Length: 189
Image (cartoon, rainbow, N blue to C red; front, side, top):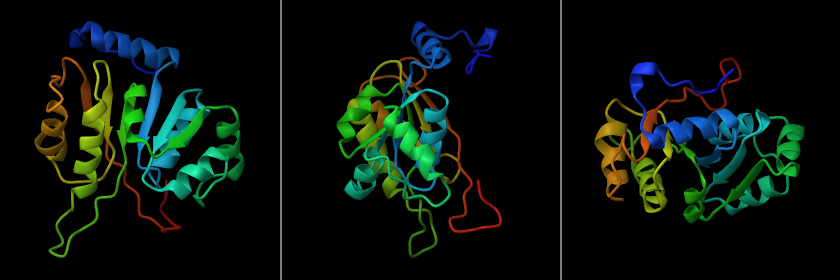
């Protein structure tokens, strides 16, 4: 089964076709910005499927633990993290410049509420700027952070297009929010 099968009418560019081929062959490198309770499980699942995963986070402690094959997420199996790291399928860094190595990048950073109870996009915008600095043709950027409608199109895409690349032509963007309630033992992913 192909992991990505473009719709015949989609008329993907050569750039999109090349990306689809990498995904189907599992040679696409998966980048994860934010290795918290959303990002790390996503990365681990891709590593289990045989993809090479590069996690990027500001926490040196998390990065060091993952690179030693140690788990810090109570919802994940210690052995799964250790195995993925040992096989070289899961690694982490604090160097955001390495995002250029990834073919698919998930942005999985917090969107807390500010004092007015409005979503604070600071982490999303910062992650977008980091991705934009290394953005290259053929990449797929997926916003996983739970946020309000329009965030991707109105906030993230303009930041990415500062790179001089055109969305939908040179690279691709998607929004796939994660619904997670941290610490909820009844309803969890």
